[in-house]
Length: 67
Ligand SMILES: [Zn+2]
Image (cartoon, rainbow, N blue to C red):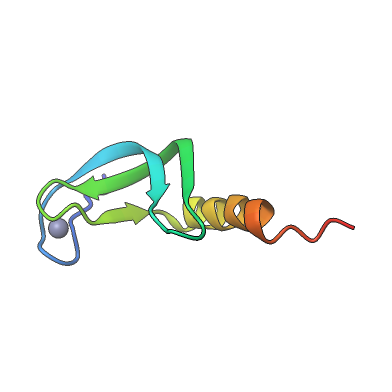
């Protein structure tokens, strides 16, 4: 079984289901995704696949190249 620990403080991760990107220009909130947040330092970790998914949603929202 995979046990995830925070790479910064080695705290335990808890599961989170929401991604929040607090950016003045490009704010983004995505629900229903699987991520982990450190209980100690609040660092958030997402798997490679989820990171790709976030990038996709972000690009579609702000850098859509629809013609
Ligand atoms: Zn941490």
